[in-house]
Image 1 (cartoon, rainbow, N blue to C red):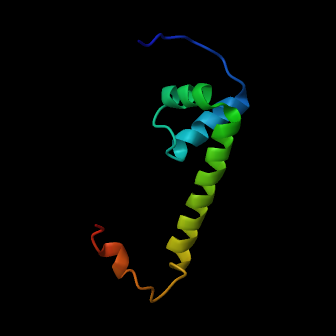
Image 2 (cartoon, rainbow, N blue to C red):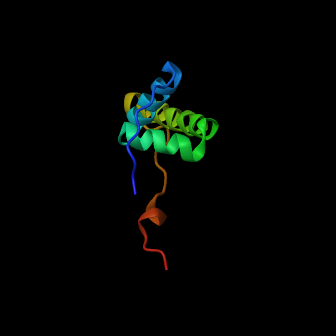
Length: 81
């Protein structure tokens, strides 16, 4: 059961919520706030740092190309038993 409440948050929390949405950690502000309540600010900040590093690597690889050439990836395509 959900209950609607209206709250004011610090600007830093608002920015954290927006960052969670932009990184895909949460789809909505509602989801972001619920994640913050459930996991706490410290855990969410760790999660954001990790996602920012992943995004940074992806952008670098899209710009410069994937750093590894000629890797044998056939085992990744084989069906696991």
